[in-house]
Length: 372
Image (cartoon, rainbow, N blue to C red; front, side, top):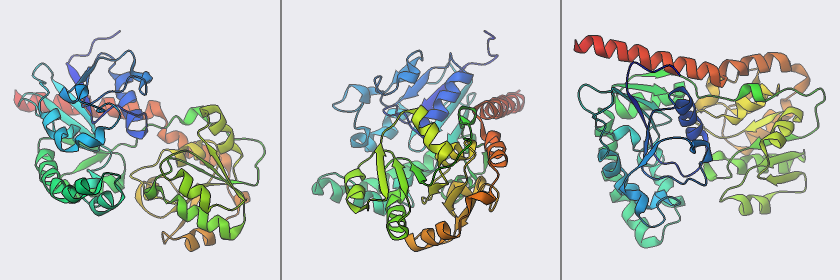
């Protein structure tokens, strides 16, 4: 194995569940397998992809429920990340949508932050965070004042980052607004080569994702209840029971299924339904890698990969009626699966790794030269 001419460490908010941000972290780990990963809490059972990694946890790891309910300790996360010592490293790459970008490094250490999004519950989603949180009412009363502290810390700590990478142009704009900083856009890795188009297409539409409020699965349900067209929903989450109770017989909830089954459902779907405003969105690109077009709300990360009439179609108002109208207008026979798949392959994981490695090493050379 070739040795890097620099010592590098990784930082990540928490490692308690494998989702989109953790896919990025896993790609970092595959680029730099010897780099230790600094994180607030770590659930080994849920994160078996990192079984061979050098994971270094904060003092929160020993606190009750920390590895399962990291949300309980949000006010302490800034302290947790500021307590890490990076004096032995030339570069730290943080993967952050919360507090990992707030690490403190020496003047001779380069800090690059891959920002999945500026902290949503501190900024544009703070009101919803209070309203939808499941904390007892006395804690809910304290959340606004706690968020004021978190918001101030988040803004100040952003100045510690030498270079930001945004996962989409949408997030790049949010970094500019909240952190007053520029960012390079490098889209997250998609395991595009895993997915393949099918020879035949079925009559159903498909949604894949966590069943949580901001995903706007309720809009998809309302639209398809009205349309009476078949819709399959893959995923679980806190909204599962509520959403299932809303659905008519044409809507099928499949729960959690294997990756191989997701691959088959994606390949045979008429189209993928994407009603959320996401920072990026991996699942729609997995559908595209399967040759299937996407019907998406025109906003967020989808603007970076949905091409009207080529890889999918947009609707302009985030409302069930607008989605229903887009489905009525949609004609899957006008889309070329090969063209859609070729577009998705531009986001394949090896391309991401190459771009990240070149960016980090290029910025490190500039950093070294400026300090000589």
